[in-house]
Image (cartoon, rainbow, N blue to C red; front, side):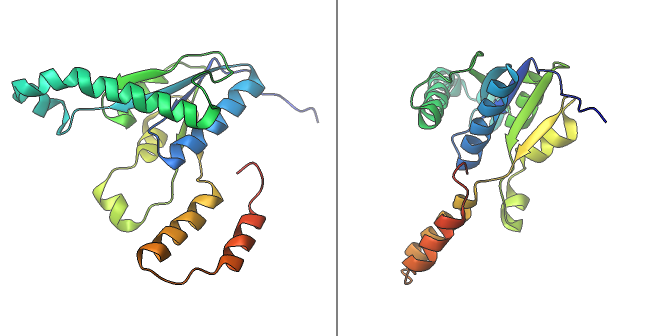
Length: 188
């Protein structure tokens, strides 16, 4: 039996918000784009507080749109810097800031037949899922291209537990913490 290699994708479109899950997805998308010789398109989607309808309703909000767009660009550049140490990803492609709800904006951006959409698929509790819609679920349900949902780094759960213990002022077992870090693979 012969192995068939997938053809190189034209673009890896990755949703970036600055969250730990999106940064993990950005690392994975960059690795895949580099490996396949494809372009990397980090995309940060934003919308005005209250949505576009609220921005149209209040004239003062239209003045703020330029400021919100600038802040979104800064957040995208910070995410690139946090992951790559500079704004240069080392892979061909371009970063984009798109105005709109994250799910629909990512699905629109990754509309090509050779595109692969990469999103972070974080662990979320029931309350969080009930109050805030999941961008990754939206993309998985509606994208016309393949979607790679990247699970969070195992370190993320360990660090969340440490934050909870610190917030509650509980004793922290550093030996247990050390063992958790030793079991995480180096590329996580």
